[in-house]
Image 1 (cartoon, helix red, strand yellow):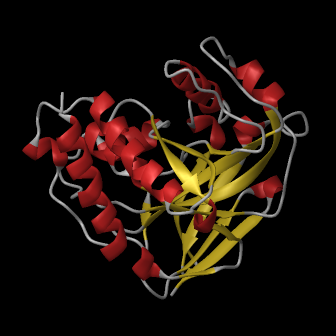
Image 2 (cartoon, rainbow, N blue to C red):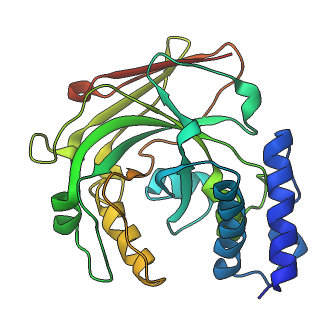
Length: 261
C-alpha cells in the first residue's frame, strides 16, 4: 500500500493534470504495489480539495459495468467517481474540447434518487424503489493517465475517467418503461458509430446503483436523495475532436445532441 505522502503527491499530480488538461505516467508503472484502496484514497484527496475550493458534488458515476467497456479497457470490475455541478450540460450544448484529455463519449442512463439508498444488502428492487426517474445521458471521458496498460487502480485514481455529462430532456419513472430495452444509437457527424441497449449494463442499468450503495456501505456511507447516478455505458467509447457533432437516439427516451468546439 502507498503512504499518505505518496497518496497526497499523486492526488496533486492529477489535480495539476486536470488544471492543465495534461496526461501523467501510469501510477501502476511507478507504484506496482498500489491497491484499489489506495486509488480510492487518491480520488478522495482530490475530491475533498475540490469541495474545499467551493465545487458542489451532485452525484456519482459508475464505470466499467458492461462487457463492451470491460473488453475495451481490459478491466473486469466496475469502479466509481464523483461528479460536480459544473460538469453537467444540457442537450444542445457546445462543449469546449480543451477542457478534457483523451476525449471520448459513452452512451448511458442516469438516475436521480428520490430517497436515500443504503447497503450492504441493497438489491435491484431496492434501487428501483429509491429512484425518482431515469434520464438519458452521454458521459464525456477525461483521462489524465496514459491509456496504454492502465489498470483499475489507475482509472479509479483519475476519478474513474469522468469529465462531464450531457443530460437529455425525457424523464421516465422506472415503472413507466422497461429500462433494460432502452436503445442507444450513437452518431458522430451524421455517421452511426456505436449501438447498444441498456441491458448491457449488468443486465439492468439500475443494478449498478445497488452495487454502488453496497460499496458505499463498506465505508459507512450511503447514496443520498437528489443525487444523480450515472449508471455506466452500454456502448464502447467513441473518440471525439473539435468540430464534431454528436447525436444519440435513445428511442422512447428521446435524443441528445451536442457539439465539441
